[in-house]
Image 1 (cartoon, rainbow, N blue to C red):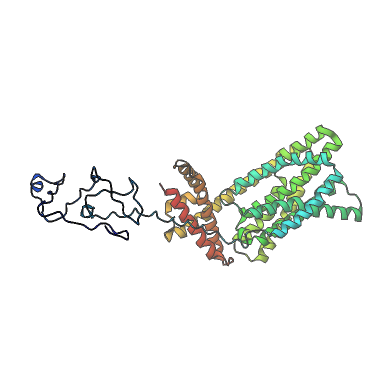
Image 2 (cartoon, helix red, strand yellow):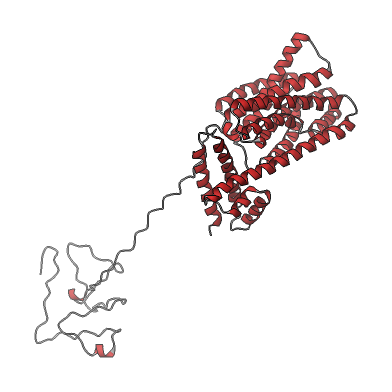
Length: 460
């Protein structure tokens, strides 16, 4: 007997009782089974459970926990009968792979409106709401606002079609709308009040053909100037200028329509309100957007040519004069003769010419985008086929159809790929003129984004 938890010492069998020969392995050949190796412990048969010694209870090992059945093998005939093979531990689970870092974004400076500007516009909006509540009453104001949403939605849909593949920064879009709807309207009302106090009431012709075009286009043009000043790096060309000008004009028309619709409801009831809604909301919803778009077009054209800020503002001033003239012509044609005849002969052709001009500008934009992306294709960033897909209307359409057929419908990725490529071409154009201090940073960020998006599009 041993103490201290040691197992009993091994005692060999007496000499007169030789140990039984080892059992041959079941996997051994007949020849190997017939030749036992004497003097060595029997080798265990791996892959089979050990055979317990029946009729004898297992000997406990004092000082150590007893093995539970099924946890570890027990009941070997002797200490030498234990298997000598080493069973490696199960492999450890790998640590989670690090998450993919967020893709870099272009520098926001020069591409967004300050929150303080929205704060100022918010206070002005509260004053404007009070003005309408006093002038029109709550019911007429709410009715006018609901109806005014219809022409606003039409204009915004048209702007979306123009700016589909290179959308402007959201904060600048909201600021342009808010300036037209709040600040421009407020400044116009203040000027009208001051002029009324100074000279008294004016006749309809003077108000419509002289005062309204002059004051309204200056206040709306000021909003386009502010967009250029705070978002210079997002004001890349004439199409961008048209977008910002149209947004300012759409915001102005929205608030002005609330007033016209409310007054029509108060003075003439549902019949007069319906006529005003058809004329202003359905027949000519793009009027103010077209006028102010001339200001934005002139500024964007100067920016595309690489003019200094002073030159861009000078071009914008010429655009304001053109917007005033177009506005006066539009209002005068509705007062100086049969409205329907003048609308068909003058205003409809003017609107068609405006649409054709935008189509021509979009084609020029696509040509310039393709030219700039070819610079990156020559450096190996894009293939020639990708340049066609990313820069041309037909290629973009084909790319979207191809992405829709991929697993999981990857049109969202394709749209992002096209947007980043268009923005990259604009950054390249600004870098060539040397007016963008952040062009190199934006270029690297957009190239990395384009490469990552391509990898996701092609992943299976």
